[in-house]
Length: 391
Image (cartoon, rainbow, N blue to C red; front, side, top):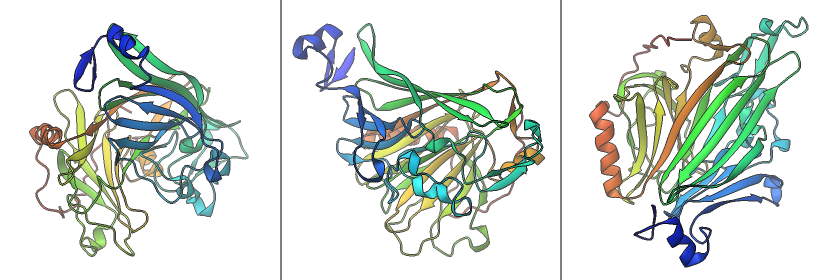
C-alpha cells in the first residue's frame, strides 16, 4: 500500500480522494528556459514523502536538485546546470569540465575518469589517432540522453515513479558505448534506486571506467556534519605531503573557509554480508542525512571529496570502478575494464534520505556493524592499493 500523510492507501483509496496520484506524488517532464540552463529538459520527481528531486535528461540523466521537506540536499555550485551545448570538455587544459560541475549527481566515464591522461588508442586501429586525450572525468556528464520513458507504475497497491534513458558516447574510429539508466522510487519513500548498464555497442575492444560524483551541500553540510563509512584503512590522500595544514580531517566537517584547497581521500571500504557498502554524511543538529549504498563488486574503490571553499561549499561521496591512480595506472596494473562487442557492466545503487535522528541512528548502527571507521581525523595513508581482480 502507498504510505502518505501518516496513513496507508490502496490505489482505489488514492483515486477516491483525488482522482489520481498527482496531488501527492508524480514525475513530470519540464524544460528550463533562462540563462545558461536554457533548453535543458528535466524530470521533476515528487515521492510524496517530502522528497523532491530533478533529473537532467540532457545531462546524462544525472540528478540535479534534491530536497526533503524544504531542506536542501544536493550541491549547487556557481557553474549551475549549464546546457550541454555550452560545454567545453577539452578546454582549459582538460579542466573545462569544471564549468559544468553542479548537482547532487554527476556521472564520470564512460571510458575515462579522474585527471587528464594521454593513453594509447591502438585498439581502434586508426593510424592518425595513436593516442586518446582525456580531460577530467570523461565525457558522459554532458551528453544528452535519449529519453525512452517515464511515469508511474502500479504493482497492486504499491506505486513506483520511474524514468529510463540511453546515453550514447561514440566516435568514428573510436568508442561506441551506451549507458542505459533507470531511476525509480516507490511512492511514500525516501530511497532513490539507480540501475545503470554500460554496453559496448561497437566492434572495437574498448576501455571502460566509471565513477559517480555524489555531492551534498548546505544545510546537511555545515560545521559539525559527520562522515560515516565502514573504512578499513585510508589508502591515499591528495594532500598527504602536508596532511594537517588546513586542519580538516576526514570525519568532521568545518564551515566554509577562505582559500581552501580541495582535499581528496581514497578509503578501503568493507562490504556487508550481501556485498553492499553504505556511506553517509549526517547532520545531527538538523536531524537529516544522505546515505549512498553501492556494491563492492561493482565499485571496488571509493573516494571522499572535500571542497570547503566559501561560495563553492560542497562534499562528495565518490564510488569508483578504479583506484585514484588513474587511467594509465589502471592499464599498467591490469585493472582496466575492457569491453568487447555486446559486453556490459552493471551498477546498482541507492541514495537514501535520512529524514530524522532515528534514521541517522539506524544508518550509523548499520555502518558500524560492518566495520568501525578510524577514530582519528587524520589516519595515516597506507598507499596499499589492493589488486582489483576480475577484470
